[in-house]
Image (tube, rainbow, N blue to C red; front, side):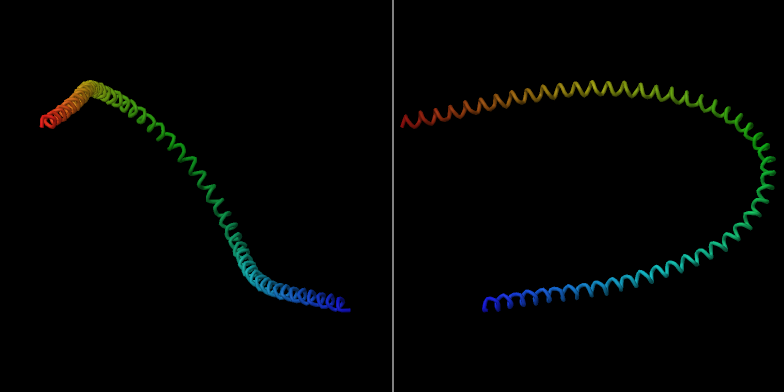
Length: 183
């Protein structure tokens, strides 16, 4: 009997825990539902506003379309007149183009002659600069060779100085030892 009581008590506790969990979940769902309803209401208001704007734009577009249709008709009439004028002007423009092409051809000839002369002058200057550059390179090469010789001589002198310094130190040690043994 006691075991049944414990089992019943455990089942009651388990059911109570489940009930508490279900109540918590129902509370969370109620909160989420309220949030979603609030969000839906806001979205509905936003979409209603956008729809109203679109309806106003459509009405405005219809009015503009009527105006544009009338304007288009007037423009077609103006275009016909302009095309007639255009044909006349094209004849004049062709004549002017032919004249300008002739002038352009003459100017190109002069320009080509000037370019050839300028190019010759630049080629002479380039040749002069190349000769100077070659001379400078030779001078630089000679100076580099001289510097290499000086470095080599310096190294030989340093080696000789080191050897002399070592010999002098050995002589001093020998002299000190001789004086020490002489005493």
